[in-house]
Image 1 (cartoon, rainbow, N blue to C red):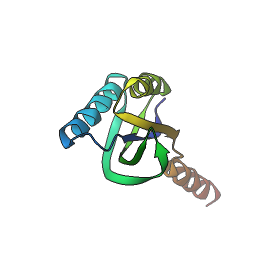
Image 2: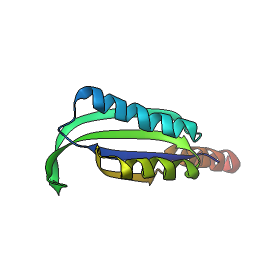
Image 3: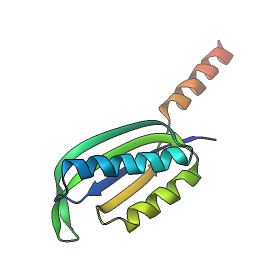
Length: 112
């Protein structure tokens, strides 16, 4: 069963645009190899961090939305943990509004 996930990670601010694109492609390929689909990747750009992380005040934010098995996340997060470029990451499971819409439609159809 595929579940919708969102992963946000922060890259060091001192890496170049080419290295940012390489990092995005690396994690996208890792997820694809693990069976993730419907990938949407947004490079949010360089932003100020709320607090200093590993002596950095800024970071390059990247957001990935995808569907896939839960087993796809561990290898990607392990690669991020070992990477010098990633200073922070977070993966969350998304609640699907489409499912609630379908449930409401089914309920309306039954009661009508």
